[in-house]
Length: 147
Image 1 (spheres, rainbow, N blue to C red):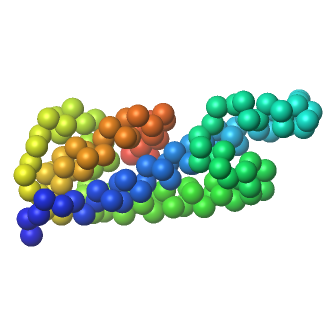
Image 2 (cartoon, rainbow, N blue to C red):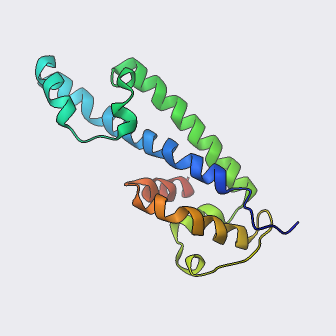
């Protein structure tokens, strides 16, 4: 079936905020124990609002604390892996094209079919900029691709 709609476009769009949240939590997991050991809690509470962080984390104060943060990180890892694998199964070219998009970004196919290179190109056309503007997202996908 030929269509101008992409089967993977919405899952790709949903994956990005999940990856962003996972990257934020991973970063928080890396620096929080060091700060907690050396800086009194009162000082951390004063600094916390001034530290740049994603609005995703800022809006969810419940994930700042260790046990909740660790549990959420593990759930997000699972969710991102499921999304990544599902998209990979639907279109084997997409993730590698997102990591190295040069030849695909100039293409403007008018139609595509599920799993086709044209589907990859259309999905990149609609999603690439947001992935490129999200710090760490492209590096995360490149790392996922090498697993």
